[in-house]
Image (cartoon, rainbow, N blue to C red; front, top):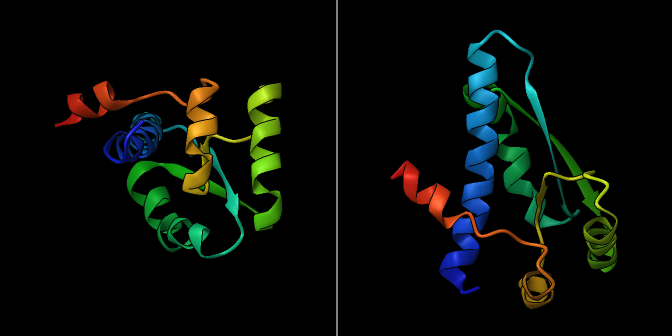
Length: 117
C-alpha cells in the first residue's frame, strides 16, 4: 500500500465514522464513540485538538487511548490477532505498514473515499 493509499485508508476510516455518527446524531441518538489508539506522544495530539469538533459537527465522541511508544506495536498486533474490537482507529508508526497490510489487517477504503468526492 503506497503513501496515497495509506492516507486514503486513514481518511476513509475517519470519514466513515463521522458519517455514521452524524446520521445517528441527526436521528436524535447519542453520540457514537470511536476509540483511537496510538503512541501517547505527539501523534495523538491531532485527535485531542479536534475532539470537541468531532462531537459537535459529526456526533462522534473520540475516546483516545495513549500507549507508550515501545508498546504500540505489541498492543495493536494483539488487537489484530484477537479481534476484540477494542479500537476503531489506530495510529501507527509507518514502519509497521508492511507488516499490518501484508497480514491483511488493513482495509483499503479508497473506493469509499472516492464516493465522497
